[in-house]
Structures are given as structure tokens and as C-alpha cells.
Length: 595
Image (cartoon, rainbow, N blue to C red; front, side, top):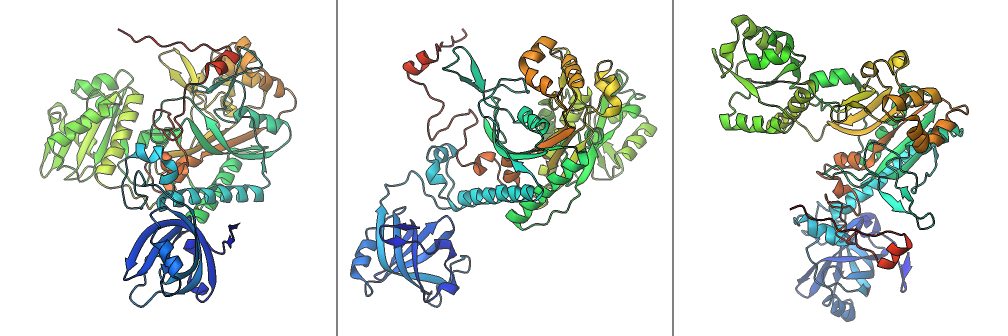
């Protein structure tokens, strides 16, 4: 790389003892400036790190004069000679800490105004300010490390998939609006007035068409778009490692996925994660952990107490247990010292998930402390304690309600208590496959079934006979991969028969006419020798957040949006010129405020 007579020989962070005695040319930004008795020391920084450069007036008075004009974040180039740092000045914490560069030539490429915030690693800055000046935030070593690591992950995935015979094939960004579970982002068409493209929520239909086309191993690291409410692990646009394969079983797709993940961890962290990963059925995951993305780094498992609850005089339990609901318990080991306020706060927490109350029992030496123990016989108490493996010093929690409420509330409580007791180790990477999902979930609000994953997921072969007569018992050939309690990927074996796909639409109350309107191209394609096929998508943003131990995916994305979907850097979304709206035949109407 050359500019204005200088040709880079090294990145700043890569100058080592091997370069002592040689001349180097470096480009970068002034990070720190120090004057020690006339000699000026500057930390010069680029994406690979920092190296100390030295301006000595006895070597060049002109360079020394220029050094006194340099300020933080000036962009400069230098030529100089690498030498040992003087005795007593070695910095063992720095990769370049044993060397320095005596400057023989310096060029200022551009100056910098005073920064809105320092870009040193250790200084906390308000996130809104960081996002507004993202190009400065990205100069921080942590952020550069994050994006470099993300690059390594993507490269490792590509390299592995290429070795397995996969072809990288791009699919359209401007496509047709189809119902896939979230709102579409719509793009008006100027050439087809009154009509719209949609940005893809995933390449799902196109990758299935590629299988029908005969490209039996496809992948793509692709952008996807969903107009949904945002949170720390969501963005309106996100990236996934997307793949599809023909003539495969669930095991084939899962094996390839484990290979991708193993390659990524080896490349980014130098860690060997050893397949095969643990597998657990959906029903077992819900029964033991109250979640279809179980964090299995610790215990605190849920226990089903419904049969015991049916016989008790505690009506809160017995009425629920005898009317089709569930009663589950959770043993917070060694937590009997929780205060009443702490217990009440946990009760308020589970109410977020619909729980009407949180019953509890403290197991103390020779006694049980609880407002509910008086409602149980000695035998019932013994059964509960045995079921929960209770010991002195434990705190038992109970929820009685509809299955969804019980699972959601106790599953969340389990994680809350684990954090309170510091049971989750961020240095442990626990991969778990969840399999055998239901094909459908019941939508109470609309009194109909929804696809638990998406409407192109294949039913288990032996359950196909119940697809229309008893959809609630049909299992899906679906599988999710979770890491430390976070779903990082999911997929399924797809429907490859046109008649089954049309039956699926009917169960979802998508009429033949609507199915033809929205998915006619897929229904037709399935009639022309479609192979059995399946695939999966890994959420790259979520995976990198865990690998890099960040709290938000915004810190692993170069230019993210806020939780309101706003780009503070560019001020998008923004109003557009009326002329542009006229060309699209669009009129913007102001929403009236409700009185």
C-alpha cells in the first residue's frame, strides 16, 4: 500500500523484535502523545494494534517540530528504524512492547478536531453518542477486535462449506411479500405503480427452488429483514449463515452445522468444540427446563408435581391440576437465606410471564417455613421434598397454571436464580440440539393453528396421516441449535411434495386461492421432480455476541440500528423529497393523535 511517497511495510501492531535493525513504514492514527525531556513519544495505532514511535531532535529537528504539532487522532504516515526499547521501558502487556520506531520521515495526511468522546478502550461512553459517531467508536480496539473476529468466523464458515462441496449462490433482495411470521419491509415499485417488493425475511423459498434446480448443496452468508419489535438480540436487518442440502436426513444437516461451528470456534477462539453435540427432545426440554432453548450449564431443573397436587387440600394447586393445568416446582439449592423481599420480587418477576402467584417453601433445620405447608399432609410434603430432592438450606418455588404460563414463568425464574447465584459460566460453551418439535402451535387469539417454525417444514412421516384430522399431535422434522440458552440456529427437513404442502396451507387456514396467490411458484415447482431436502440458518450476529461475550448484537455489527430501528449515524429512516413520492404515487398521511 503506497501513498504520497510512502509504501506501508507493516501494520503498527505487527512490528516485533524480528524487525529490529530494519526500516519500516507505518500508517495510522495518533493515540497518545508524550514529551519526555525533549524527546516526543507517540502511540501510533491501526487496526492491528499500537506501536511506540519516537521523535528525537538530534536525529531530525524538522520531524521533531512536526511531532509537536500532532494531536490525538491525526492521521499520519511515518518511516523509521526499529530498535529495542530502553531498559526499564518495556511494556509486557503490549504485543509491540519490546520495540519502538525511531522516526526518520513523517507525513500528516489529515488533522482531527477535538473528539466528541475519547476512543481509548477503558472509557465508557453513552451508547447513543457511540452510535452517532460510529466511525469513531469503531476505532476502539475492542470494536476493531470484534469485527476482525467476525470476519474470521465468516471466513471459517466459507472455507468449511467449500470443503464440503457447497456452492455460494446469491438470492434476491427485492422479492415478493409472503407471510413468514413477521412484518415485511416493503419497497414501492416506480415501474409497477401501486405494487411493492418486499425485503426477504430469509432466503427460504429461493433456497428450496435451488434444490429443485439441482444445486444440491447451497449456502449464503446473507442479510435478512424483519419489521418487528426490537431488543438486544434483534435488529431490523441481520445476518445468517444459510444452507440447504438435497437427499439428506436431519443427521446430515446437523453434522454439517456442527462442522461449521467447530471451524468458527477453532478459528476465532482457538477452542476445539467436539461434535456430536448433545440432543434433547422439545418435550424433554420443556419438562426439565421450561424452555425450548435450555441453558444446560447448571442444574435447577423443573419437576412435575401435578399428580401430587391433585390430591392436596391446597385449592390453588388442586383446582389447576384437576382441570388440565400443570403444577411444577423448582429447587433453588442453598437459597433458604433469600429474604422475603427477594422472594416477593421474584414473584413480581414471574407475573410478567402470566403467573398469578409464586408459592414457596424454605427448608430449614427441623422445620419448613411457608404459608402453604399447612395445606399438605405429611405424606404429600414428603413426596414434594423427595421429588425436588430438597435438603436443609434449599428454597422451593411452585407455579400452578396453564402449561405455557408454567413453562415460561419457571423457565425464566430458573435463569434469574442462576444469575443471582452466579451459576452461569461465560467461559463454558454448551451446545444443545433441540429436536422433535410440534409442527403447529395453537393461536388462542385467532382460534387457529400457526406453524411453529414455518409452513414449509415437513411433518414426521408417521404423523402425516394426522395432518388434517389432528394437527396438534403432529411432530415436525425440525431442529434448533442452542448455545448457553440462546437459539443460534434452526432448520428443518422441508416439504417436497406439492400435495402435502397444499394440505399444510389448509391446516393453517390459508385458502387455496391465497396459497396460489402467495406461493404459487413454489407449489408449481414442487410438481417437477422436487428432491427431498432440508437446511438450516445460523444467526451470525447472535453467535458472535456469545463468542465475544458482548451483551448486545449491536456491538458485533459495524453500523447497527437502535432499539427503535433508527440509525443515529445517518439519521435513517428519514423523510424523502415530495418529487420522489410523486414518482411512486405515494401520499404520506399524518397519524392523528388519540384523544
